[in-house]
Image 1: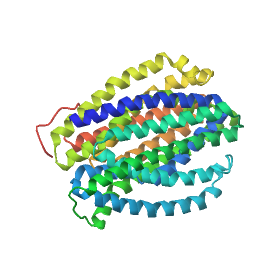
Image 2: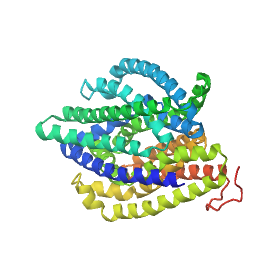
Image 3: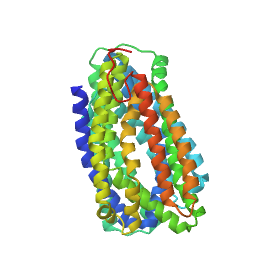
Image 4: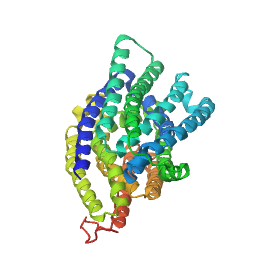
Length: 442
């Protein structure tokens, strides 16, 4: 447990700095792009993240789970096999994306070179994912924290330099913003690759034992495939959601410009503010996957129950004050990004969405560690179906419009949080009020 908390607090500390940097980054973007440009930028990001999700193959999760569960003597063989597997997958994915992107209509409103940026991003994500997964598995969270910090810091520096010295139109500004995103990922790849090579040399000097490629592939893909499926479904819905919401708002009577602007206020302003404290949840999630995997492999039920209690308590202790602060200071916070009064209203309406989201992130990591990825995917599918139905029903109503969309999002997040929680409690045999069972194993 000491290793868990050391890693968690290290990641939380660095993530806090990183979130402050990202906060500044979004302020720069909001000021440079404007409400219309920010709406276009936030609309294309989910599509890019979908390709990034596929490129990663969720290797950070599957590798970290493998490393946590297996002895060190098997690690080098696994890593060598994974590099070969990732190389083949990257070539196939780059070819598929190169053929697919030119025919997708959503890219027609953006700079033509944007497609090549996305293709260049694929190998960066895939190979940095291998290093991330290994360092997560061996609990070297300092390297993960450094990589996360580098990515956000370099993006801010590149943005400030480029926008300070040059002026661009909206289309070119969006392209430059995404260039800085790709550039920061390249720097992270170089850092992680250097640290990974040093780690491989260290492993080479230690005792090694062969492990069959078939066994490694089965072990990795049994986690990677369903987790990637869940992430891809999540990314696909996120990619569709901006266009779906704007279509619903058009049906409610808004003009296209108004719909784009109001979506930009929610996604670019309200989400930036509300998800700021989520760096704690993401940090806990990173450490939870290998920790829960190891405890579950040893059938240590008491440790799992204690972990769940502590994580839920930590989330409550930071989540509740966070949403209260966001409520009280919604107006001064939103004016940092936009002078629209609607932005503050949306932030206040979204407080349940933010609070439940803080709980969902670590609980999803718990499910992955317990081998319940399919359950997590099923929960997400059900909650998404409910959310989309409510978005259409409430958002298309002229009386509700964006407020109706927000009510639907709040409901969907509450639903997925409750499904995650009930499934975990059932699996580790703990009551709904987190009362310990007397069993040491299950």
